[in-house]
Image (cartoon, rainbow, N blue to C red; front, side):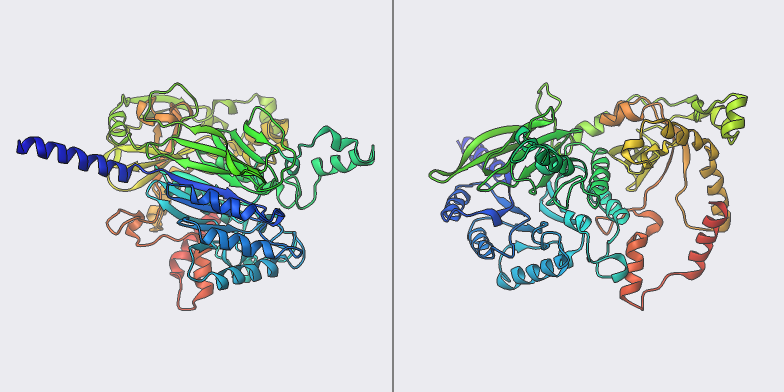
Length: 581
């Protein structure tokens, strides 16, 4: 009898425990609230928020105030702070920056001060302090991370906190991309959302898609000229404009190295859910009124619909997005539910699998890593495509073509035993080499970089795939394929701190998981990856307590004169870099 009672009690307890752990988490995205004119809107918004049962946070994605409508901000923040939201994250938009005007920087600083002053003890977060570009990480839970970026900083044509001011730790696009990549990598095993006011891609008018009537009305020819200008040149509101275009292209290229990331925006005055390169791009910017939205093969949903969008993250890895429609009489009501990503833990035949968060894979990874590593050697040329005729050598140069085209005998990388076992977790950045990051059984991280390069990635998008890209690719032969191995010997002799590369051939191994098609049979070099430790006991490169990027180091030196570098070490390293190249 006691056994039966205990069994029933244990079953109930376990069911209760699972319910506690198995809560959904919701993200509600809203933007362009400065456009709201309906006096009853905020009552409807309050009613909708009170109906959300799961834990949730709200992302207010820009354009919350303007010179002609300041009362909307008060109503918005009063409604949101009285809701049950755990966090209310505010991201400024172009209209908060004085519509990209000359006073934009000061206007957004004043807005930040106002929000923080009026809501000191609330759950409102303004992560992009001092109008800095970000990125800023906000942990929403053990399996969900939100990364905030200030897209208007890149779009703004006038004064802003630049690198020389010392106001922001990061104030260049290069440093921003490097930091964003590191943040994404550090969230391996979690759902990742990136939120910024401007979209990366869009099927709305700001993205270059216009209804047919825009080309002819209200005045034929002139209307067409205006629409063509916005589509091909653009002003500060259009994604194609010269200040924002290159940044969004580079951001899109960075995101294309990953899978199952969700990007939230609010600039377009419509509702969109798009799939591109196995990532998801959501725009929620029409709380009360909506404008044109096109439909293409990228669309999971794209409509000129007033409302908002809610993301739902299940504990099993399933992700849904729910579209809510706003109507004056009925308020904010559910319109459509979309399965965005399916759990990798379920046996479902679909390409839209959540590969970022796989809660059931702890044992699977271990099992997969015991794959069929080829414990022998292979013969391969570093770059057989650099073979050239006498004419080509005379015209483009002989370079190190013989070294690139000569086959070498290289050991296969044994994933199940090297450094205690290697588990891949993310692709690396860089516009020329392919790289794959590994967590090792010895507690360190490593990166595998391809020997061959394709510098075409550094070209503008419109030049890739042209004969110029082919010529640039051929010029890779000016570099010795195995120069890093020689540099390693020299650096050892000079006692200069560095990562130690080893040459391997990547096996066709199931332990590579989803990265297998891209990296199997690739010639590359494996070396330590300097990273900051998550815990005091985690192994780090050179046993460092903290690893700083150069731009952060220079900021530390600027902020505090007591900070200094080891001058002898620094000079030796820089001198070697200058001499060897």
